[in-house]
Length: 341
Image (cartoon, rainbow, N blue to C red; front, side, top):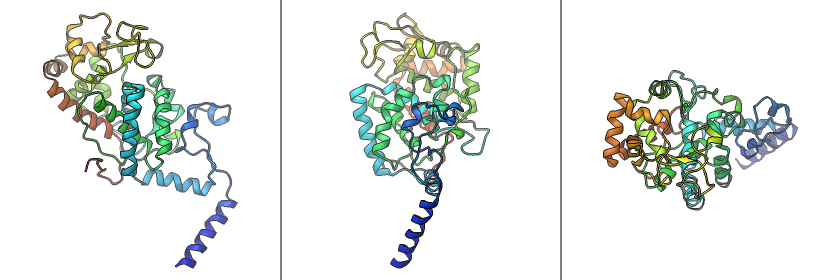
């Protein structure tokens, strides 16, 4: 047996030495955030370079799809994310990172990864440049050192782990998460632009239903997930919405500025629904899609409930967040696995 293994290793070394250079490999994503002058960058398919020979790179690509994340590394990464949250107060942008990776899912497309969803595609420059993802490069810069430290976890799992941990660390409910998501392997597998919600459509309620029904979510999910706007701020230079700063945001924490939906915009609670219902504070943001929650009769049932009952909101939010985080994902093992078993 030892002789056979040695012979096989020698064969692999010989074939690797003879192979031509590989094309860029998707798993090393840190340089994908910075454009260059190559033909690949000009075409918008920007990926990070790899020093792996072609045959070995192909094997790693297959492993990225077939192999689940390492549970021990995910647990360790969760502790690092908690420390990152404590030191940078980046809860809102990490929630957005996870949502925008999974929110491209189309239930009408069966094939993976064409169906979109939680597959790590948001690490590529071509998708980062989508208008709805403005500013998310900052989230990737925050999370990339953790990915580098724990190479046996996928970006798809890391994005969703960061999002759920941010909710919990901000005082929100514990999300019943599962892991084992596979990553797409190249920027050519990114979804087309236009899959995510618009903040100011002509018919806000119809638009929300069009986008979230496409994902397989329902009215309760839409309203519950909207409640995550209790965290964060809208920056006009990124989204075109909100004030440059308010009395709640002018001093940070983090980079000052923007307009928040709630006064305590790093605390996860049901104040979003209370503020949207009352509309008493001009320093707090109300987007057309926010107002629709109390204007549309079907949405209003849930919005009123959540404004009055934080426990009910937390319960429904946790279920909706977990559902969103699984959309379109390809799991191995097929049923996924929990970090709390």
